[in-house]
Length: 239
Image 1 (cartoon, rainbow, N blue to C red):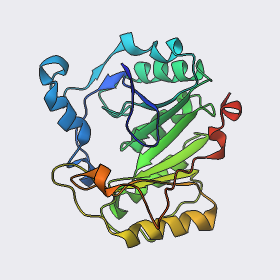
Image 2: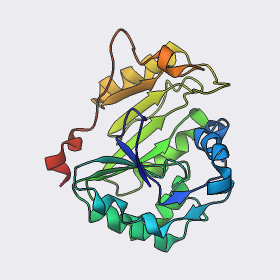
Image 3: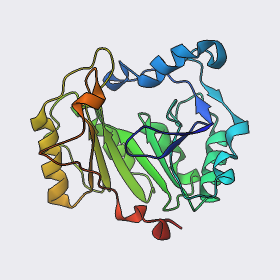
């Protein structure tokens, strides 16, 4: 199940795990939960975390260098995902140096617990979601790992994070919430993060304003589109 993605900062999704449970404010209007409802007869309930060993080989079959968002429909470090399966996923990623793999978690405690067992390569990017100031400890946990590329998905941005600590972070993605009942975002909140990124020379990616019609709202910030990536995103450096 590798699917071409409409997510602005990746190219395709790879879901060897599906299903999740909510852990924080950013989960309230989860797009993956909404999508699962449409296919519940086929996929089962979103709260049912399932592993799919038959999907492990998908990246190996794709020879064209591709950026994969790993588990867009789940959280790789959910407590119900067996450690052995996580290690298998990491092995596949290491065996596919032509690709870049982007992992996001809201459960960095388990990530840190497993860090000594994980073998990191430059093509495996590790990120945490930071939707508000309450989520700051996730950044501290991310810094404890041996991931070579560390990034933040500051989405949905629910409040000002003017005092966010970006030390040791290689990339910041920022976006507003979209969907039927999106919570509002303010421009100043975004500018605060942009200033911090510029001060530390961190690539900044503005994903969307969001809203009920995110295409109409667009991605322009101060009259331009911010599509910045870590320098290591160049394929020759990831191999």
